[in-house]
Image (cartoon, rainbow, N blue to C red; front, side):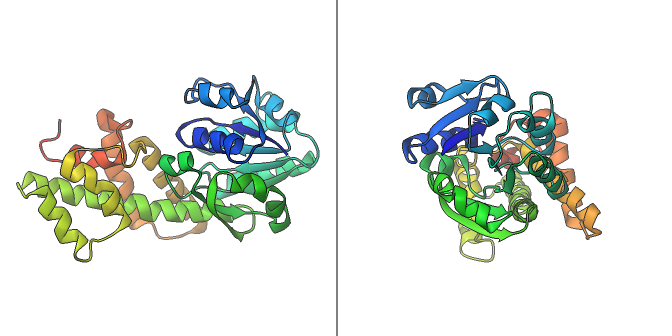
Length: 292
């Protein structure tokens, strides 16, 4: 199969290199200023394309790995979008974090021109993308998933079929709400601990040996104790976007979102203070009473 990718960012770059190096597939990618440096993947044989339509025309499988629903919709149905270059039978695999209702609409647009659509959001980090050990939550036709599974295997550790189209993104938003919510809560507690002069290693040890033990603690501990933010290179602005998507999904479902509103307010305060490009672990610094 010929593979295309749109979105060679922190996550997409790792996906691209593994599609080429581990999977041995041919790869076309959208030339875009938001890409990470592409020298490595070009050296492995990747070919640049000027528009999403060109990527689609060259591919049997197209992976989308962009910020959110507005970007996905522009890529799929916008000017020179995927729908205008798609070959019948081509499968779109949307690894972005997007709104389920938008995903269903994009799936219908692809179906109308003879293609197939899967939502396949990721639940790990850029480090796992680089290592080829991402986890995917896939919504859509199970038979279509089996067709593209060899491509997905090149950059994943697990690929779980979780339901109908849109269910992958619904579960990703639920997952990110819990994950980002935990980390935001922890950052607020760590900031108060630091303001009180508590030894950060003692703070981490107390949580790790009690009810605070969690993946959130593991990801924030390097920043809490050593000021190392690199364990989770995820922008605060992207965390804010994911929480707002969760809130929009909750509104559409008539679901309670009292705690989600609080998390959103905390993240918005950081973004409004000009800290949107900080990494999530840096919330520990941003939330301090004497933050810079």
